[in-house]
Amino acid sequence: MKSFIAANWKMNKTISETGEFLRDFIPLVKDVTDVDIVVAPPFTALSAAAGAIQGTNVRLAAQDIFWEEKGAYTGEVAPGMLLDAGCTHVIIGHSERRQYFHEDDAVVNRKVRAAKKAGLGVIFCVGESLGERESNRTFEVIRREVEKGLEGIDADGLVVAYEPIWAIGTGKTASPDQAQEVHAFIRDILGKLYAGTAEGIRILYGGSVTPDNVSSLMACKDVNGGLVGGASLKADSFAKLVCYKKEK
Ligand code: PGA
Image (cartoon, rainbow, N blue to C red; front, side, top):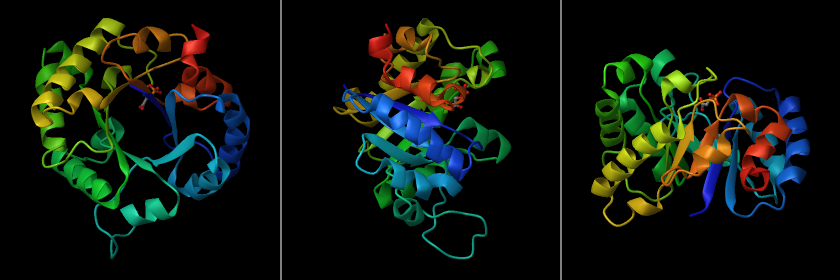
């Protein structure tokens, strides 16, 4: 299966910083054919990024979406607007959206539906907090997030990202065993939701992925890629991640 590595820049980079990054990054990964490479700049830089990646092997994602097509929703961005800006993908249900903007499973599900209807690929995020892990609720939380978030959704263009909240931006990466355990569990749930096609759904790991730990994570059977925050902000670092097979 082709792996999938996405840069989640969160609230970082201006338009000119985005341009600089892509100027440096694109030549470093131009020969990569076995990884789907995606960058997710903030909304304001999407259109400029779309211009910069034209004709390259880099694809564009937004970090969020709203489910209505247009109307009186101050501050929101519609699926069609993301397509118009050049996006092929969108990140939905990131734990920072769930935590700071109170997005629950129902909201996440509406967003996934709207994105899929518009023809966008979806990077659908799930993950447990430290408290949930420590109280042995990891599997219960992941099951709920996957089942509710993907209710009524088909598997086409779907990528799932497992991001343990305790590993995001903390430098504490899940061990390969911890990641594989949850990824296998997610694969199992997907198998029930999408009999026959679950094996083809990419499951990304996210949470303090770096050029140093990417190979050991990618070596896990059910880890098919990464969603990378901090280590994706520098072109050489993200290029090393994308070229993880060469770095070994
Ligand atoms: P991190 O973020 O790589 O900085 O831990 C990952 C994410 O939140 O997608």
